[in-house]
Length: 331
Image (cartoon, rainbow, N blue to C red; front, side):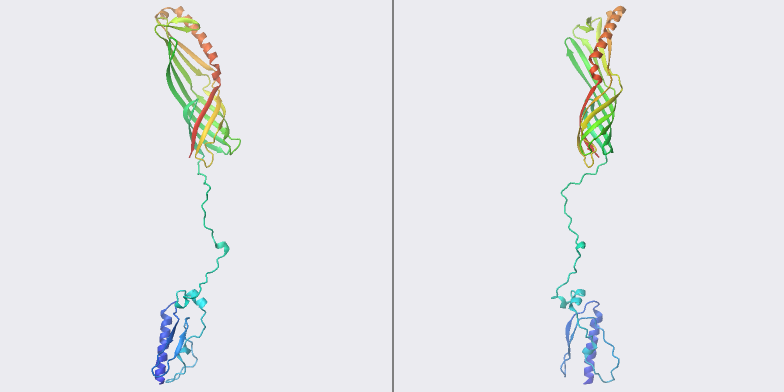
């Protein structure tokens, strides 16, 4: 009978050791029942934990066995809370509540929310402004120097011609505008669009015209009529300005290089000082005038008098009005 008990115990211990070594970090808690053949079965509940056979100080004598199989297993009580925390997939842990570690308030990160405010566009401080003005059609380039000061360089020009008929005289007039401006803008209030502008304009503006009488009529020079058939066939005139470099002052609205702003509207109102107008009159002598030097001298005297009169009448242009409109784009 001792042989049978010893063999049954050995099988039980071997099974327990095999289960403990084959499952690395999972122990299945189940009830092990040894079927009895001739004696009542030895029933032990195997508790899921790390199984380590206890060492006995006294070895059993050959042919005898004084311990039950359950004595060879650890009797350390099972803490299901710790066990299920380490092995949550174990069948014994299906009905156990899962403890979630508390999260510190500072570790809870709020979900990002969409900001309704628009982010200003990143701009470079350089802008170009196509514009139309009394100086012609062109564009200016603006660079931000400080929050209150901008530097601006612009080019404007225009060339056009027109035929004008007055009484019995045909006039062919040409307008030639060319201006290069170098200006500085000052904004007294940084966040406002009002500005003061000053600088220099390199100008080459003039008006040219040629007059011819129709149907053999006459041309009046300084109150004297001259026949256009054989005495004075035509008169050519040119009006220009005395200062090739003209000072400029003015006011305006709109900042082309305002931070974070791509598009803008620009308007300017100012005056340029190009100097007093200069009038040139060139006569076209006919056959009779070419053959008569005294007649040429008379015509030249009357042309000089007419020239001075015209310069006096155009003297108001020494203060040239400048008005412009433009749309700016900042890079």
